[in-house]
Length: 348
Image (tube, rainbow, N blue to C red; front, side, top):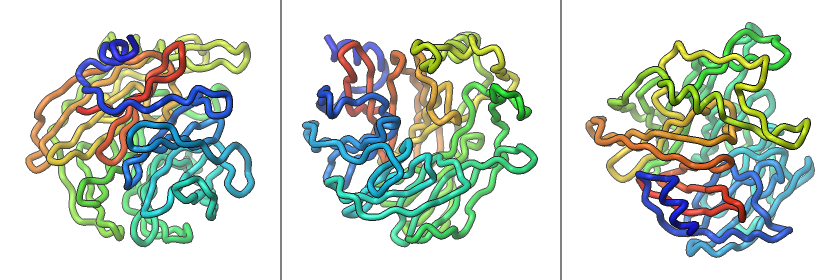
């Protein structure tokens, strides 16, 4: 029954390995947010608000969870992104700190990276490349791709981009509106170990070598349009946990929330590098840190890697509190249901 539910929800996507949901009081998965498959095929998933990392073997059996909420060594403050590199795992959290663990969850070291809002990152042979956003003194939101050395010291800025997406907060102190299908900054690795990064208001991806040298760029034939009536309705009905009463609240029920449909949708909110294709996935919310937990519907476009030609398009749907996570040529669907989460690798 659960497999049938999964197939119905994900429509055009094919189901792969199932990963065991531990569902015990000590290891319950409550807020999955990002993932990475290690070099030996094992899976690691960030559980955001419990501030834990869950680990599975390549065959889908559950192994352990580690870390936890806090500010001390080996503790995390709302972890957002993780990646494995050689024999270590790195986590970037909202406390603006990078933490390193070995692949069994033993804490090794950490360093601070103040003043930035994390979006994504990847390890290089000689440091890191990071994607982040920051507000300027004029209340402009800018996005950056930048290099760091192995100690976290800032290096070359690869791109500095003005984002036309802004969120008008409840206090109303900033100008701007929330944009549906808004842009995101993403980093992904190809099968040869090269990194690609892109800002999704552009259909161009930039290639980066394992030591952070810009190698070139490719532009893809991606469709672009304004949100449809059905997409507007979906966006406005996205719901969030309501801390005031323990229930949920939809975007349309927040009286001070504003949104704008006059712009074109972003080309994508995530992309995925395959052997000779690139998948561009577009979901209603990108730049709000993936915070929308409401019923989701997404679309994807698949392009040929060499020519950039559009090959096919498709769609998928999934229930509230579910996630589709993409990382380095692999895709993971974490589908919410009454008994917890159903976790499968999926293929485009």
